[in-house]
Image (cartoon, rainbow, N blue to C red; front, side, top):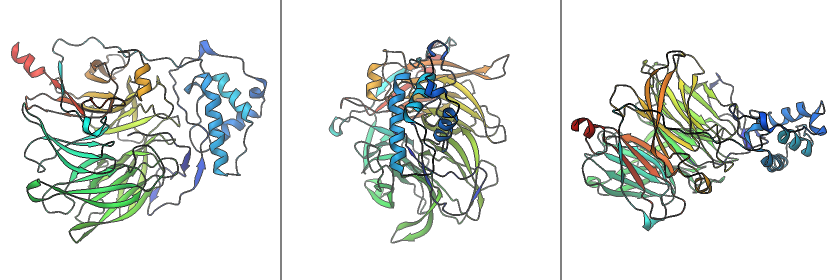
Length: 537
């Protein structure tokens, strides 16, 4: 999901607290949009610290001011020459907030402090393909469509169809620029598509039976605007198939929201119907996690009662699962912006929710971009596959972006494992691509147009396959071998994995997000030719 880091943050609810109703919003202002990397080498770029920055009272004052509402921004997160702009911007946002209760450090001393400790430039990571086994999959590129009539594509989400929705397998494709929600059908040599609805800026689509009639419909999260802004244009839509699925009715389930980027269904209150949890991303001054409680039907339309579960902005994903096995649906929230946390919302029943930490980045601009719940190590519980690669907040390639596995060991928080560095990492999913019985990982990258144009050709791939290859004999860690699938472009905001052509092998399906040309296909399928290769041997 496209995001720009916010400077306004709402008061967080203590981890482990039980939420019984909407919490009050208390605003405070963060100082910087920043990033952090423990891997950044500053040894060769140290400079002399100015006298202002070395005064005994200045550093505690800066640390207190800059770390009051969020993690303290590490100086090595930006190149030295960027810090004057970052500090001036942060001070400007602070004064705009009209908060009188902070001890404000001197502006120039703050600039000196960060510049003195920052590297001259950020290093670029090396994304190298590793040695691969002889039977690794080979992939053949298949471009499915061109959207020249609607401008350059901006595919925000690809939803695999669930059983009962359609006779043919396929995808629901959400284009956040054109507003199209389109059904793409697969399963053979010919691919066709049907336009289901034209909304504002759809960002996520899910299938569910909201009216309990035995027929699956679609629920759509709508941002309400293409560019980030604080507004009340966001919506949650219900798309209901009409006669024989030839036409669809679009119904507004919730309106007057800020930018909505995810919606997931479950019977959260145990009353027998389907409710919805909503990630209202917002921007600087808006955004929450909402629960839409299903109150039944009126005039053939579900009536949804809105409840605020969390007042923080920046939520990207809210996948649903029964995380603790108590029979009640929980959900996991990825909350970005300056929060940069992943938290479990445990459903305690009777409208009560308990928050538990899964992961927290020590960086208020870590660039969180997505999560997926999956049992990656096949030990019987759900882990979290996590990407941080959002490059829209500071428009630079960051060496600490990448793919992480958050291992569920039965306690909170989960254990974090760094799988690979991957600038622009936007989505990661798991499936058995090589048919060896374990789960591999596919990740795609999205870099802003100027960054994609400036990077060295081929230095950062657009699609990678991380092959699970057993455990390291020394550390016991799961090993992943990196293979480049697409090296020319980094323009994928969406991805899914499925057997697109029915040959028994899992293919990679990427949604394309283009900045310049209308000739870019909306969808690219990387057909896994493992089956053909084995049959020919």
